Length: 283
Figure (tube, rainbow, N blue to C red):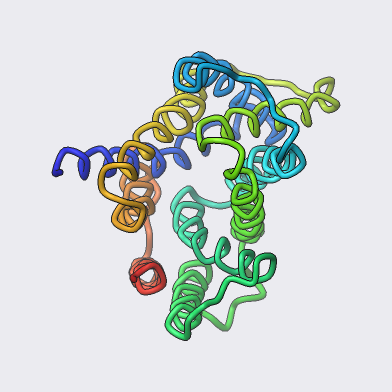
Protein backbone atom coordinates (compact mmCIF):
# COMPACT_ATOMS: atom_id res chain seq x y z
CA UNK A 1 0.00 0.00 0.00
CA UNK A 2 2.87 2.39 0.81
CA UNK A 3 4.01 2.47 -2.82
CA UNK A 4 0.60 3.83 -3.83
CA UNK A 5 0.92 6.52 -1.18
CA UNK A 6 4.24 7.46 -2.78
CA UNK A 7 2.54 7.60 -6.19
CA UNK A 8 -0.11 9.95 -4.79
CA UNK A 9 2.60 12.07 -3.18
CA UNK A 10 4.35 12.25 -6.55
CA UNK A 11 1.04 13.26 -8.15
CA UNK A 12 0.68 16.04 -5.60
CA UNK A 13 4.22 17.20 -6.37
CA UNK A 14 3.48 17.23 -10.11
CA UNK A 15 0.33 19.31 -9.60
CA UNK A 16 2.03 21.56 -7.06
CA UNK A 17 4.87 22.23 -9.50
CA UNK A 18 2.40 23.04 -12.26
CA UNK A 19 1.85 26.56 -10.96
CA UNK A 20 5.59 27.21 -10.77
CA UNK A 21 6.15 26.00 -14.33
CA UNK A 22 3.16 28.04 -15.49
CA UNK A 23 4.60 31.13 -13.79
CA UNK A 24 7.69 30.73 -15.97
CA UNK A 25 5.53 30.41 -19.09
CA UNK A 26 3.47 33.59 -18.72
CA UNK A 27 6.51 35.73 -19.50
CA UNK A 28 6.64 34.23 -23.01
CA UNK A 29 3.04 34.10 -24.28
CA UNK A 30 -0.54 35.15 -23.60
CA UNK A 31 -2.89 32.97 -21.49
CA UNK A 32 -4.87 31.98 -24.62
CA UNK A 33 -1.71 30.94 -26.46
CA UNK A 34 -0.37 28.94 -23.52
CA UNK A 35 -3.71 27.19 -22.98
CA UNK A 36 -3.90 26.20 -26.66
CA UNK A 37 -0.32 24.89 -26.81
CA UNK A 38 -0.55 23.08 -23.47
CA UNK A 39 -3.72 21.21 -24.32
CA UNK A 40 -2.77 20.49 -27.92
CA UNK A 41 0.33 18.69 -26.63
CA UNK A 42 -1.70 16.97 -23.90
CA UNK A 43 -4.33 15.74 -26.38
CA UNK A 44 -1.64 14.36 -28.71
CA UNK A 45 -0.12 12.42 -25.81
CA UNK A 46 -3.51 11.27 -24.52
CA UNK A 47 -4.70 9.93 -27.89
CA UNK A 48 -2.57 6.71 -27.98
CA UNK A 49 -3.20 6.12 -24.26
CA UNK A 50 -6.98 6.36 -24.67
CA UNK A 51 -6.82 4.20 -27.79
CA UNK A 52 -4.91 1.48 -25.92
CA UNK A 53 -7.00 1.59 -22.74
CA UNK A 54 -10.43 2.12 -24.27
CA UNK A 55 -9.76 0.29 -27.57
CA UNK A 56 -11.64 3.14 -29.26
CA UNK A 57 -11.77 6.93 -29.27
CA UNK A 58 -15.24 7.06 -30.79
CA UNK A 59 -17.29 10.05 -29.70
CA UNK A 60 -20.76 9.17 -28.41
CA UNK A 61 -23.68 11.49 -28.97
CA UNK A 62 -24.92 10.83 -25.45
CA UNK A 63 -23.47 13.35 -23.02
CA UNK A 64 -21.81 15.42 -25.74
CA UNK A 65 -23.22 18.76 -24.50
CA UNK A 66 -21.77 18.48 -20.97
CA UNK A 67 -18.56 17.16 -22.56
CA UNK A 68 -18.28 20.32 -24.65
CA UNK A 69 -19.05 22.32 -21.49
CA UNK A 70 -16.18 20.51 -19.76
CA UNK A 71 -13.86 21.61 -22.56
CA UNK A 72 -15.00 25.22 -22.44
CA UNK A 73 -14.84 25.47 -18.65
CA UNK A 74 -12.07 23.19 -17.37
CA UNK A 75 -9.77 23.36 -20.39
CA UNK A 76 -10.29 26.86 -21.78
CA UNK A 77 -11.56 29.15 -19.01
CA UNK A 78 -9.81 27.53 -16.04
CA UNK A 79 -6.41 27.55 -17.76
CA UNK A 80 -6.84 31.06 -19.18
CA UNK A 81 -7.85 32.36 -15.74
CA UNK A 82 -4.95 30.52 -14.08
CA UNK A 83 -2.35 31.85 -16.53
CA UNK A 84 -3.87 35.33 -16.22
CA UNK A 85 -3.61 35.08 -12.42
CA UNK A 86 0.06 34.13 -12.66
CA UNK A 87 0.79 37.27 -14.67
CA UNK A 88 -0.01 39.35 -11.58
CA UNK A 89 0.44 37.21 -8.48
CA UNK A 90 2.84 34.60 -7.14
CA UNK A 91 2.79 30.86 -7.72
CA UNK A 92 2.48 30.49 -3.93
CA UNK A 93 -0.80 32.40 -3.89
CA UNK A 94 -2.20 30.54 -6.89
CA UNK A 95 -1.28 27.17 -5.39
CA UNK A 96 -2.92 28.00 -2.09
CA UNK A 97 -6.11 29.43 -3.60
CA UNK A 98 -6.42 26.26 -5.71
CA UNK A 99 -6.97 24.30 -2.48
CA UNK A 100 -10.47 25.80 -2.47
CA UNK A 101 -11.33 23.56 -5.44
CA UNK A 102 -13.13 20.89 -3.36
CA UNK A 103 -15.34 23.57 -1.85
CA UNK A 104 -16.12 25.13 -5.21
CA UNK A 105 -17.06 21.68 -6.49
CA UNK A 106 -19.35 21.11 -3.51
CA UNK A 107 -20.97 24.55 -3.81
CA UNK A 108 -21.71 24.12 -7.53
CA UNK A 109 -23.06 20.61 -6.85
CA UNK A 110 -25.21 22.11 -4.11
CA UNK A 111 -26.67 24.63 -6.57
CA UNK A 112 -26.96 22.34 -9.62
CA UNK A 113 -27.63 18.90 -8.16
CA UNK A 114 -28.99 19.90 -4.74
CA UNK A 115 -26.25 17.89 -3.03
CA UNK A 116 -26.36 18.48 0.70
CA UNK A 117 -23.65 20.20 2.72
CA UNK A 118 -23.25 19.53 6.44
CA UNK A 119 -22.80 22.21 9.08
CA UNK A 120 -19.20 21.07 9.46
CA UNK A 121 -18.57 21.65 5.76
CA UNK A 122 -20.09 25.15 5.87
CA UNK A 123 -17.86 25.99 8.87
CA UNK A 124 -14.83 24.50 7.06
CA UNK A 125 -15.48 26.71 4.03
CA UNK A 126 -15.56 29.80 6.22
CA UNK A 127 -12.31 28.74 7.93
CA UNK A 128 -10.53 28.15 4.60
CA UNK A 129 -11.79 31.41 3.16
CA UNK A 130 -10.45 33.30 6.18
CA UNK A 131 -7.09 31.58 5.67
CA UNK A 132 -6.99 32.60 2.01
CA UNK A 133 -7.90 36.19 2.91
CA UNK A 134 -5.05 36.27 5.44
CA UNK A 135 -2.64 35.19 2.71
CA UNK A 136 -4.02 37.61 0.13
CA UNK A 137 -3.81 40.59 2.52
CA UNK A 138 -0.53 39.54 4.20
CA UNK A 139 -2.41 39.29 7.47
CA UNK A 140 -3.95 42.76 7.18
CA UNK A 141 -7.62 41.94 6.60
CA UNK A 142 -8.56 45.62 6.67
CA UNK A 143 -6.73 45.97 3.33
CA UNK A 144 -9.13 43.77 1.38
CA UNK A 145 -9.72 46.58 -1.10
CA UNK A 146 -6.03 46.37 -2.08
CA UNK A 147 -6.08 42.66 -2.95
CA UNK A 148 -3.90 41.66 -5.92
CA UNK A 149 -5.95 41.30 -9.12
CA UNK A 150 -4.12 38.05 -9.83
CA UNK A 151 -5.57 36.50 -6.68
CA UNK A 152 -9.05 37.43 -7.87
CA UNK A 153 -8.39 35.81 -11.26
CA UNK A 154 -7.44 32.60 -9.45
CA UNK A 155 -10.59 32.69 -7.33
CA UNK A 156 -12.48 32.94 -10.62
CA UNK A 157 -10.53 29.91 -11.87
CA UNK A 158 -11.56 27.95 -8.77
CA UNK A 159 -15.23 28.76 -9.40
CA UNK A 160 -14.82 27.66 -13.03
CA UNK A 161 -13.33 24.37 -11.79
CA UNK A 162 -16.49 23.80 -9.78
CA UNK A 163 -18.55 24.24 -12.97
CA UNK A 164 -16.19 21.88 -14.83
CA UNK A 165 -16.62 19.23 -12.15
CA UNK A 166 -20.41 19.54 -12.27
CA UNK A 167 -20.26 18.96 -16.03
CA UNK A 168 -17.90 16.01 -15.46
CA UNK A 169 -20.44 14.35 -13.17
CA UNK A 170 -22.94 14.29 -16.03
CA UNK A 171 -20.31 13.05 -18.51
CA UNK A 172 -19.07 10.16 -16.38
CA UNK A 173 -22.26 8.20 -17.01
CA UNK A 174 -21.14 7.76 -20.63
CA UNK A 175 -17.34 8.13 -20.54
CA UNK A 176 -14.43 6.92 -18.45
CA UNK A 177 -12.34 9.64 -16.70
CA UNK A 178 -9.57 9.07 -19.25
CA UNK A 179 -11.83 9.42 -22.28
CA UNK A 180 -13.62 12.41 -20.72
CA UNK A 181 -10.29 14.18 -20.17
CA UNK A 182 -9.25 13.46 -23.76
CA UNK A 183 -12.48 14.67 -25.38
CA UNK A 184 -12.81 17.73 -23.13
CA UNK A 185 -9.27 18.58 -24.21
CA UNK A 186 -10.22 18.15 -27.87
CA UNK A 187 -13.25 20.41 -27.53
CA UNK A 188 -11.22 22.94 -25.57
CA UNK A 189 -8.57 23.11 -28.30
CA UNK A 190 -11.28 23.44 -30.97
CA UNK A 191 -12.89 26.25 -28.97
CA UNK A 192 -9.61 28.16 -29.06
CA UNK A 193 -9.10 27.87 -32.82
CA UNK A 194 -10.98 31.13 -33.64
CA UNK A 195 -8.29 33.00 -31.67
CA UNK A 196 -5.40 31.32 -33.49
CA UNK A 197 -4.42 34.42 -35.48
CA UNK A 198 -3.72 36.33 -32.25
CA UNK A 199 -1.42 33.68 -30.79
CA UNK A 200 2.26 34.50 -30.42
CA UNK A 201 5.25 33.23 -28.47
CA UNK A 202 8.44 35.21 -27.88
CA UNK A 203 11.88 34.58 -26.40
CA UNK A 204 11.58 30.81 -26.65
CA UNK A 205 14.37 29.10 -24.72
CA UNK A 206 15.16 25.81 -23.00
CA UNK A 207 13.40 26.73 -19.74
CA UNK A 208 10.25 27.71 -21.64
CA UNK A 209 10.25 24.42 -23.59
CA UNK A 210 10.82 22.31 -20.48
CA UNK A 211 8.14 24.18 -18.51
CA UNK A 212 5.66 23.75 -21.36
CA UNK A 213 6.42 20.02 -21.61
CA UNK A 214 6.05 19.71 -17.85
CA UNK A 215 2.62 21.38 -17.73
CA UNK A 216 1.37 19.50 -20.80
CA UNK A 217 2.67 16.02 -20.09
CA UNK A 218 3.87 15.85 -16.49
CA UNK A 219 1.13 17.85 -14.77
CA UNK A 220 -1.65 16.76 -17.13
CA UNK A 221 -1.16 13.31 -18.66
CA UNK A 222 1.23 11.66 -16.17
CA UNK A 223 -0.37 13.18 -13.06
CA UNK A 224 -3.83 12.13 -14.23
CA UNK A 225 -2.63 8.56 -14.83
CA UNK A 226 -0.95 8.32 -11.39
CA UNK A 227 -4.01 9.84 -9.74
CA UNK A 228 -6.33 7.26 -11.29
CA UNK A 229 -4.04 4.43 -10.17
CA UNK A 230 -3.93 5.84 -6.65
CA UNK A 231 -7.70 6.30 -6.41
CA UNK A 232 -8.24 2.74 -7.66
CA UNK A 233 -5.87 1.26 -5.07
CA UNK A 234 -6.52 3.31 -1.92
CA UNK A 235 -9.92 4.89 -2.59
CA UNK A 236 -11.02 8.41 -3.46
CA UNK A 237 -11.29 9.60 0.16
CA UNK A 238 -7.75 8.61 1.12
CA UNK A 239 -6.35 9.80 -2.20
CA UNK A 240 -8.10 13.14 -1.78
CA UNK A 241 -6.19 13.83 1.42
CA UNK A 242 -2.95 13.95 -0.58
CA UNK A 243 -4.24 17.02 -2.44
CA UNK A 244 -3.53 18.96 0.74
CA UNK A 245 0.18 18.62 -0.06
CA UNK A 246 -0.23 20.53 -3.35
CA UNK A 247 0.27 24.07 -1.95
CA UNK A 248 3.21 22.89 0.15
CA UNK A 249 4.95 21.52 -2.94
CA UNK A 250 4.11 24.74 -4.78
CA UNK A 251 5.67 26.80 -2.00
CA UNK A 252 8.78 24.59 -1.97
CA UNK A 253 9.29 24.69 -5.75
CA UNK A 254 8.49 28.42 -5.90
CA UNK A 255 11.14 29.07 -3.25
CA UNK A 256 13.77 26.97 -5.04
CA UNK A 257 13.06 28.01 -8.63
CA UNK A 258 11.49 31.46 -8.37
CA UNK A 259 12.82 32.79 -5.09
CA UNK A 260 9.29 33.38 -3.79
CA UNK A 261 8.75 33.51 -0.04
CA UNK A 262 5.77 33.80 2.28
CA UNK A 263 5.61 36.16 5.24
CA UNK A 264 4.83 34.70 8.72
CA UNK A 265 1.16 35.86 8.51
CA UNK A 266 0.89 34.19 5.09
CA UNK A 267 2.24 30.92 6.48
CA UNK A 268 -0.37 31.13 9.23
CA UNK A 269 -3.06 31.79 6.63
CA UNK A 270 -1.81 28.85 4.56
CA UNK A 271 -2.14 26.43 7.47
CA UNK A 272 -5.57 27.83 8.38
CA UNK A 273 -6.68 27.26 4.77
CA UNK A 274 -5.31 23.71 4.66
CA UNK A 275 -6.90 22.95 8.06
CA UNK A 276 -10.24 24.11 6.67
CA UNK A 277 -9.84 21.90 3.60
CA UNK A 278 -9.00 18.87 5.78
CA UNK A 279 -12.05 19.59 7.95
CA UNK A 280 -14.20 19.93 4.83
CA UNK A 281 -13.06 16.66 3.19
CA UNK A 282 -12.98 14.58 6.38
CA UNK A 283 -15.61 11.87 6.46
